[in-house]
Image (cartoon, rainbow over all chains, first blue to last red; front, side):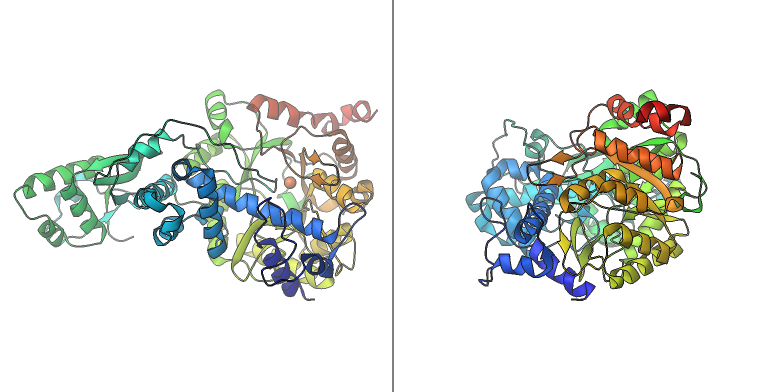
Length: 285
Length: 284
Ligand SMILES: [Fe+2]
């Protein structure tokens, strides 16, 4: 067996799903014996069989990746309850194993996965998707890039044909529920930390009283200010104007989108807010 | 002896790992700490609090980078984006040397995020040494490789773990981050004499030493980094210092993290062995 063959073999085995009791499956989905598979390349010792030695890695893999995804979605976990949340995370990770060197990116596609798999949240599906989107926006706002905002004299020079870039850490989200209130009610772990080789087990969830959620259209700016992530509620027109600018439409095109009686007030309000929070940047990046 | 090409000719003492729960304590109390080890990946982000805190730490302390995802032993080449970000961080921290593990963890673009053991084969020696050289050349600082804790061995292996370590660091001409806790954990799991391991490493290549706590289960031992250092590990440490001379030492504590003062006090116990006047007393 070459090094590459051994690594392909072991990677496949380490990622095999666990049993409900969180042990290694005795047989693969194709019916092969894991005893035989393990014995083919792993030595037993006087205490453990080849199967049991491989099982340590199989379990460790799942504890680690499930733990990493769970850390990013405490509010979604609180909404769904542990059982439904675990089923969702497991299905997600089976379909999307990590393709990045950093665990930070592991749960990036969970909102999209949940969007396509209503069965994990049944009647709460829309709410669950909105919560997941907001929680991922938090991760991106937390450590996204911050670039030099336009100074006031540069802002003054902008004309109808100018385009702008918005701060890379700013996320604009239209949601069908006031999920910012829900997410804030669930205690958020301060920051995720990658541990150095040590086995990581998942932490018990903190119980909190969750606010009841009734449908309500909301427009949120998820952004960072002085290293803290904030959820700011926007007017629909402000949101649409910012969204158009974020998509690199010219100022004239963006303003067109919100044409109506409130147009002038919206433009003034949005530009005042954005320059105060340093959201407008040079469109070079 | 301690200052050598593999740690950038530095002479660092006892350091501790920089961990999130200690940020406020460190920045407000400014404790005297010889140096901090950071997990590189935690700061290989585009912006925000991690980098702001790091810059504040760098204003006052010496920092050494330790990585968990370079996977020198992976059969396929490392990711370019990873290397570029790592180099940016190296420039930011001015780390005199950098360490990561002698293991693998990814294949065909999929990552396990674990430190998986290598088969101790000549092919693995060549592949791993080549990767280490590539990373070292790209980063332009000395690289030290750390021995990992492991729970499995392969039929393919053609030599012992310490023979493999010797061959790799010789072929790569790199340093060693000797983790004496990992040696102990692996010795329990693979039934070898840990002292033979410590006695076999090329002492002149040791850039740094890790000490840590582990968990002993009925049938195997797990590297958990959630305890004080245990006596058998201190014995291995004493022997390593005897062979290598006083070497930059770091206590790893990653889970159930106690207060900063507790972690620091545990780390400073290493001074019993590092300060030559204390050695006889500590060993006795
Ligand atoms: Fe270590």
